[in-house]
Image (cartoon, rainbow, N blue to C red; front, side, top):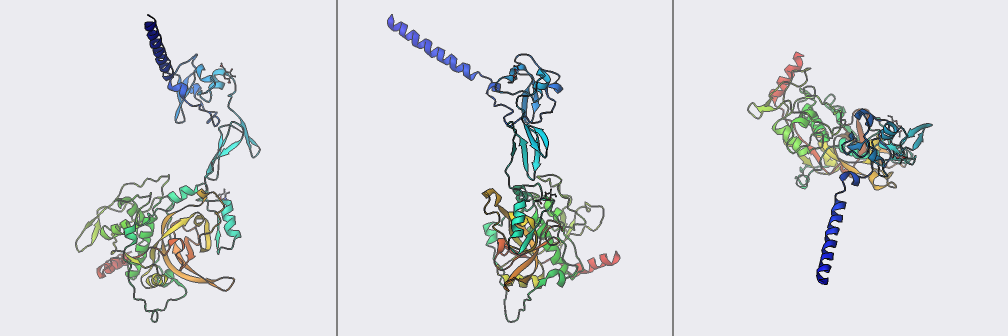
Amino acid sequence: MKLLLAIAVVLLLVVMEGMAARGTSRRTKRELMSPLHMGGIRDPFGSYCERRGGCCPGRDDQCTVPYLDTICYCDLFCNRTVSDCCPDFWGHCLGISPPFIGTCERNGHKFLSGQTYKDNCNLCTCGTTGRWECEQQACLIERDLIQGVNRGNYGWRAANYSQFYGMSLDEGLRYRLGTQRPSRTIMNMNEMQMNMDSQNDHIPQYFNAAEKWPGKIHEPLDQGNCAASWAFSTAAVASDRISIQSMGHMTPQLSPQNLISCDTRNQGGCAGGRIDGAWWYLRRRGVVTEECYPFSAPQQTPAEVGRCMMQSRSVGRGKRQATARCPSTHTYHNDIYQSTPPYRLSSNEKEIMKEIMNNGPVQAILEVHEDFFVYKSGIYKHTDVSSTKPPHHRKHNTHSVRIIGWGEERNYDGTMKKYWIAANSWGKNWGENGYFRIARGENECEIEAFVIGVWGRVTMEDMQNHHHHNRRK
Ligand SMILES: *[C@@H]1O[C@H](CO)[C@@H](O)[C@H](O)[C@H]1NC(C)=O
Ligand SMILES: *[C@@H]1O[C@H](CO)[C@@H](O)[C@H](O)[C@H]1NC(C)=O
């Protein structure tokens, strides 16, 4: 009897425990939700309960309105210690001022908690305690970086660019560059062996392809917030090379957009791409001119690339023809331009110079660091100005550019500073009219690590045909 009673008590305890456990697990999602207004009320003047058409008495889990990326409630139950009320619940349903509002000050004006403003690239929010809480991202334009460069003796000057102001460093690295680092197999591509006969080869101290080949070296374009330097640098080098090789019979500015929209195999369009893929496309498919297939800078980020508006088909003897009219109505000339396979140059400064002097501009990768964006003039070298800042202020990513010449400049102490002249793709108001100079002979930012040359595919027939085009104009 005693034993039976004991068993019954144990059983009862087990059952009760089970019920208690079920009780807690039955707490609704709503009760477990974290409070909505931790960082102050967002959108404190928004209309929620009011727009819903009123408030609900007691507890009503259906009495909700969408709020930011979640929901808020307009029932009286929401006003417990942990609040999930809509921002206008207190004002609209209770007629009192919300409990979570603090005020912050800025330029002599008062702001309520939840109100925001943008400080360069960082969003600042008025917190419940009445203090501004700002994001701590590194920005692309930082006043102390510009001042640090200009006060130091770095050999170049920095400036503020309105097109970069308000962007974070991460956004700059993500949207303004866009060349994938060549893979190890590509990096190991055989380098061209050049016959460097130093006796016979006179390499001048200064050389600028635009002066040797006037009218055949193309002006820098602006890639905007489209991370497609892979397409811009490739199209630019090919344009110059075709113009030089055809002796000016054709001077096409080849279309980066044609590559961005149509060379999509293993390529990321405005989200980055590979230069070996771009050269493959130029060789096998070819592209039209910028005039025919103009670049449209993305209006938002990440950019949308748009579908490919034209392909090319073979017309025999390795030549190709466009399958459609130009996307631009301003021209009928939808001729396809192609290149030969590209070749890799050695990283030897002299060989690169010889190549530029004899055949024209070359393509190079460039590791872009935080201070490069504010370059204005002079001979760029990566500085240590950001070295005292937290690590997220010091970042870099791969870009590609076109080298068109070189020179040297005397320092104050009489030593010489050697430089490359290179074209960027950030428009003509950046740097020295869209160009920059960078230290030469020391692989600054990897500029000499991977250098590419190419020949256009130009025949005598091409020269005559295009010549006629020009004459007919
Ligand atoms: C709602 O919450 C506020 C602040 O906690 C409190 O002052 C008020 O009395 C509450 N109102 C009701 C109806 O519970
Ligand atoms: C840079 O220019 C923008 C306007 O384009 C200006 O608002 C900002 O204060 C400037 N920043 C610096 C650091 O000079």
